[in-house]
Image (cartoon, rainbow, N blue to C red; front, top):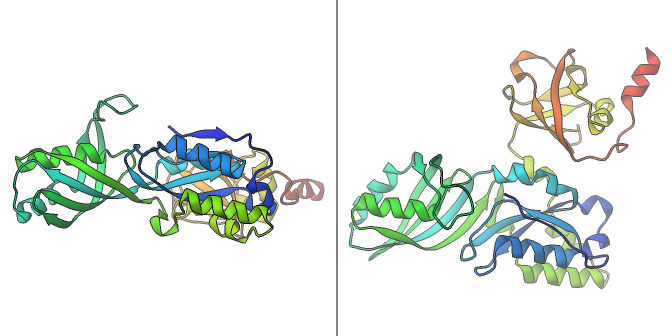
Length: 314
């Protein structure tokens, strides 16, 4: 579930940026206390723009919250699927030696079963999630500090409970911070105060601090399968046409049915689409339908209508 808010606060700071910078992503360091929806709404009010966020954090959880601005809100569902990284402080209810804690951490690496907590907003159906890495950072008495990389939708509170049961002493989550969401890391994060200060400077005529904070929407698709299209095919995709192989310049590997990013040869994101065939089933320049666009981000007319020129030549 994504949070989407539309700010009605005048022109807003976002209009002080060049038009090319009015769509993008702000990485916010969410404080403990407010909900993700509240923080996202505040960003929208500060900027005077429509916004959305990439994954809910509980009120008492801090850390990385990617907030999409402008047309970038269309990639919100994609960002929800990105893996996450957390640093967690777990409190054991009894004593346990570090070597046993380390052993249990190894047991919980890989695929695990979870049921969402009662306080969650989703149905409490049993689900499978993958723990990619679980590293014990420190043990101080009954306090255990660990770092975990996991699939989206993994409940760290539940993970602490299960690890405590496996240790035979029970446990609960004491504190949690998200340090990474997909490719967005806490080193890139800015506080709400940073954002407010940058907006104040923008109103005074210096938009550079705000410009440096906003990341291009292309950051959201880093690492995912990509199809690079020829300039002559870009406008057709912007207008919803299914991408044919003759318009493909190059591609990375992907399977049939996967979500792929359709990119220009300059590295601009045109659209997200569904692969109609696997990448091994065609070569760039060959005929045949390759990708059906599902979410178009580039405006029609940004590139010339190459498909019309081709029609005249024929």
